[in-house]
Length: 486
Length: 101
Image (cartoon, rainbow over all chains, first blue to last red; front, side):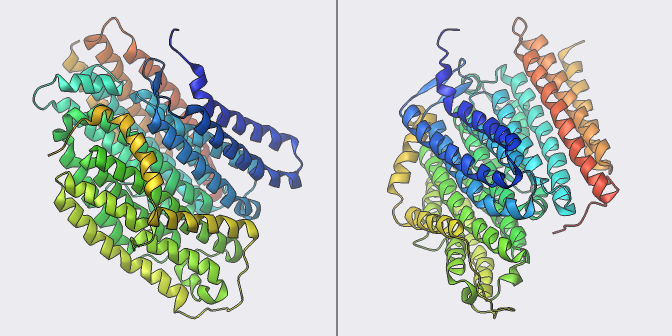
């Protein structure tokens, strides 16, 4: 085939090779040596991260006749996913050793899901995007039910797989309707067909609604969020962190490219739908979060609320809003990783994930309590932390796109969310500890937490470099800064 | 057979599957209902390809991918259901309720 440059898929191929290397090493190693697998995975991922940045920098091309796009957008997200993967792998090390069996499969499957996420961000065609999404989802189903003899993990797995398969069916039916309406599945061909279309095409609107519902399940947007709290609570904790951060970032990368490159010409037919979904999602997430007693469930509802803010950026869909959305994803990812790594560090020591168990943490481990407080302040959106900066960008971009009412709802919601984040901080700093023994953390945890705290502060205080990278990525999906919104 | 008949057939199959997912309480039957929905997708894809897009095989290729992935999905879901059955002795989705709200 002319014009096919397989070399452009090297990052994905290398991560796949790394996954097989981990499987193979697991087979050859004796049991005590398997602790090394985490370092093999992490070192491999860091190597691939550097390679990807150097090798794909500044490329702007398509592969297989437009099925894959190798541009700044997919480069940005590939690098983003690799960083997330390194953090998840490192934070899993102690947890996997203590609570799970078969570390080889755990890290191998985690790496496969990274391949799926990288392909999702690069996909320029509906079916390719679907296959990549399933690669990610299948890996997550297995990881969620990874504690095989733990009834809660089983329950998380069965709920996740049944609702996930159901959402895939909705997504596919939507894809088939869109194919029927425009006769194409490549994003650019869809946009081309839509530009030539007059009036409202009911087949297309139902198709877009079903695609939105299917992907809404994957990101846990209300009313498709029922699985999220149960899966978050039941899944092993590093997997929960991974589902909360990785799968959402990947799904939004896909949504953003699909809507910007494919559905943008029909924006009047779906904007209100997405905006309503966003308003419903953030309000429900925040209100239900107020009553939670388990830290994983609290974070599940908090992440549902954040998905609402993110959908707002999709409803606005301008280059500015898309920059805001991607910046929000960065802030969301680094903050959520921080709060989850804190929870994992605590769980590794105490084996508890109730919020009441955190009481008096400030006296027992000032460092852990401080890191957790920084993460919660950032989630609530207080200044100097990542959460404030990214909210500021996203909310003002939404308001500029003519969705002032939506930005207003979002700001009200941010204020509500402050309450339940502060309740956790009160538990740590004001309530007395039930057993005032000091809590010591192993050095890799301390190092990881320090890096993440610095990351939260960096994005919060000096977001310029990140914004520059994101603007380059945005230009790749908005050719010529099209679609100026009223 | 016309395009409308094809659309009605696939729509009916999808609706039956949707009803099955919402009404069935046995996890295996829920999975079967999901397979019905996926088959409705295949009918749609092949039908649209045959009626609207003859000469190209895009729809048929998509259907082959969907069939393959559906098979993998069924295998994975059954494995997880089997695990739940070993540990809990039930696959009724109403009784799998350790976690709520």
